[in-house]
Image (cartoon, rainbow, N blue to C red):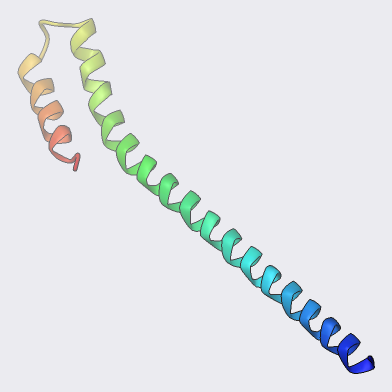
Length: 81
């Protein structure tokens, strides 16, 4: 009877440890996902910001330096994957 009780305690401790390890693994996985999505978002936002500035200028002043601004837009657009 005592042996069975000790076995149950040992099994319970093992189960708790497995759950703790699994929870830690899931937490680390969530952190990696968040970091990946943050980096991915940043990689898209930066070139898009570089494109939107010159486009805004073109919309406000359609006659001035159209060719130069268009070249900037083209160069920044090529940076996108």
